[in-house]
Picture (cartoon, one colour):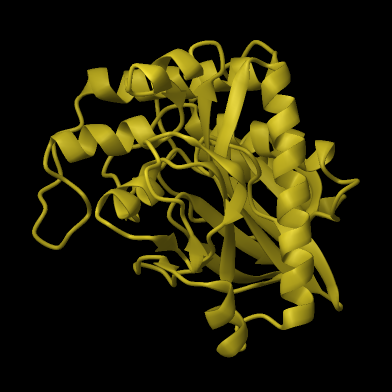
Length: 313
């Protein structure tokens, strides 16, 4: 199995290219062409090996949820010309990511367990357990990092004070975030999952706000299995989850958390294959569909040809 680590295309009408942590983004005329590679990141660090089928999985889940939430907020998607590609409206991104949490877990739990009484300006009740459900979901935004930098937690008050987002726009981003999370939560529940937390990114085009990037994928979201959630809470056991958190936890166990002096552990084939299988598992559970593996041969050629044919239409 091959993994798509990078692309280096040059399309007619191309004006920009941006290499994100896991996506290669091309601006072609008024279109944004987003290639979901098989790169994987953790702690804002791109790991040295790719995960076969990860890009296809992320792209297909994202396009599905963009379609399922288009009645809540307009989104950037126009078409998916390849299993690893989405093409859509080129927007000016807001410089914040809207992270919404229904449960106290992950980085929020790590912050809370060190004595923090609030996260991003949102007070957290005392005495909460790891993975415990909040009375109602909370929004804990981050600044959107430039390439190579870490995202930084920020409060709503600071966002407005610094003028990063106008108050009018931010109120709409909050509204969309709560409604999208509610829709995702209901959909996940129908599939026997809990949507624990996720992030949404938004942009603007001609004064109109659009949902951009990926939606409810295992890279942007965390899922628990619903059937044994309560039992694990009562026994204070780790939740079985489908997300990148198991990758983060494995790295932590190897002594890596993305700090300057941390040494990247060896990512052997067993680990790579296990991550790939976990992504496939999530795809099949969350979509209710069997994952059809596209050929991993000549990935660059296939993707380039499909994009060229789409642009030419």
